[in-house]
Amino acid sequence: MTRKRVAVAGASGYAGGELLRLLLGHPDVEIGALTGASNAGQPLGALQPHLVPLADRVLEETSIETLSGHDVVFLALPHGQSGAVAAQLGDDTVVIDCGADFRLADSAAWEKFYGGQHAGTWPYGLPELPGQREVLRGATRVAVPGCYPTISSLSLAPAVAAGIVEPDVTVVAASGTSGAGKAAKPHLLGSEIMGNASAYGVGGVHRHTPEITQNLSKLTDGTVSVSFTPLLVPMSRGILATCSAKLTGGVTAEEVYDVYAKAYADEPFIHLLPQGQWPQTKSVTGSNAVHLQVTVDEDARRMIAVGAVDNLSKGTAGAAVQCMNLALGLDEGLGLTTVGIAP
Ligand SMILES: NC(=O)C1=CN([C@@H]2O[C@H](COP(=O)(O)OP(=O)(O)OC[C@H]3O[C@@H](n4cnc5c(N)ncnc54)[C@H](OP(=O)(O)O)[C@@H]3O)[C@@H](O)[C@H]2O)C=CC1
Ligand SMILES: CC(=O)N[C@@H](CCC(=O)OP(=O)(O)O)C(=O)O
Image 1 (spheres, rainbow, N blue to C red):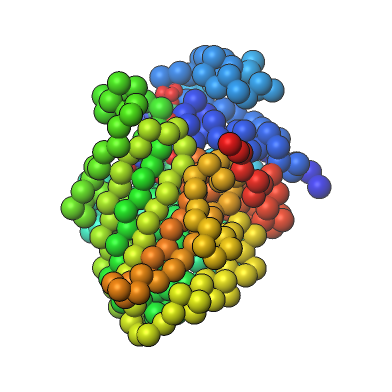
Image 2: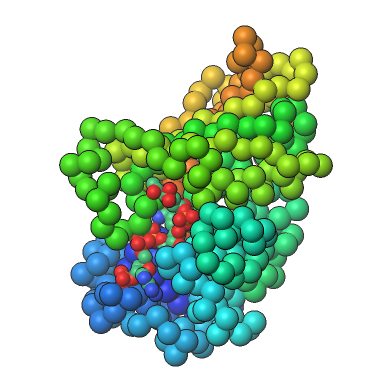
């Protein structure tokens, strides 16, 4: 097979760097243009020293001239920047957007949580949601999910779809700092982060709330109410999400586990841990795997699901590569691993 020529826009950022790390191990791709903005003109080695084989490649400007002529273009740009670039790329190019621009179907939700004009809606890149893999096969445009929506949706989807919980869920999820991107931000200074844990986006205002709501509501007849609270913790990568919802009937912990085991039996990247073992972020670092565990809090009559994901891998770049594989008709797992790093 001829190798597919792939460009990465935003190659100097965290998502772009993780994309390139994965693409360097992909047997069917050849890495083409690498673009940036403020760092255009810099050698990649100065910005992403871990990407040794690409160290001498120079970042170009993000423009239609540099991105055209590729089979696949990954966009790893700040919110609101993808629409204009994507509009200039023809349907003969597979465009995979790691940003939020095309994730939401509801323009009013976009305007409320992001502001500005909604660019549109593309096939949503979470193949493990019911029916979604079929939508992604052969797609020419893919919107990669946000990192919190990935782990929250996968942690709750089987229970919501099976109707064993009320359509009213709570998610509290702790994220590492790379989720916020590489650009300097005062709350991410080492002196603010080290030895500290903090809540942010509290009270239903975080922009991932409508995305989680959209994913879970597709699994039921009505709207699922989502209360989402993100936490920032001092680690570079990973998200640990604790999700809960009131049970609808007298279902036991064994039965809940069975619902999840059946729902994810054939999913190569979703690993339901043996009962009694709980997910931890370290186990999924650098891997495309999601680790899950579920049980029942008998006194509260609530289901508790805990999920771990690497925000930069399955939470962004790994999902993007998985979706590229589906879009191109390749083996879905090419270039991806379920093996994490420990300790
Ligand atoms: N980090 C994460 O865990 C996740 C990130 N994402 C999404 O991926 C995208 C990239 O995020 P991330 O890598 O973390 O961000 P970074 O801040 O680390 O990187 C942003 C990248 O975009 C480039 N850039 C900045 N402004 C422009 C512009 N106006 N036009 C073109 N390029 C520009 C930067 O180039 P330069 O450095 O040269 O200025 C850099 O390469 C975002 O949409 C984010 O929401 C999605 C899920 C998770
Ligand atoms: C720790 C941290 O700041 N995380 C980011 C989420 C990053 C991400 O997945 O999402 P997008 O692609 O939607 O930006 C945040 O809360 O804004």
